[in-house]
Length: 80
Image (cartoon, rainbow, N blue to C red; front, top):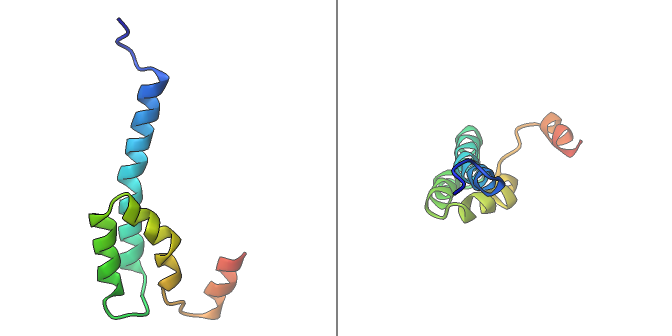
């Protein structure tokens, strides 16, 4: 009987770690940013928390584009 960690155990632990870390990164990014709509920040927090991991994926694909860009230097830095 195999008691040690195999490749599948390591892979499963890596997936669990990513699924635990990405929502935290998304929530921090949401709190730091300013959004166009009044309630957009709270809506994205609810989406990330309630629809995890799909909500986290949606935020990184759609939500980051809804943030307000403060000046032109940020636009040029993001395009690079």
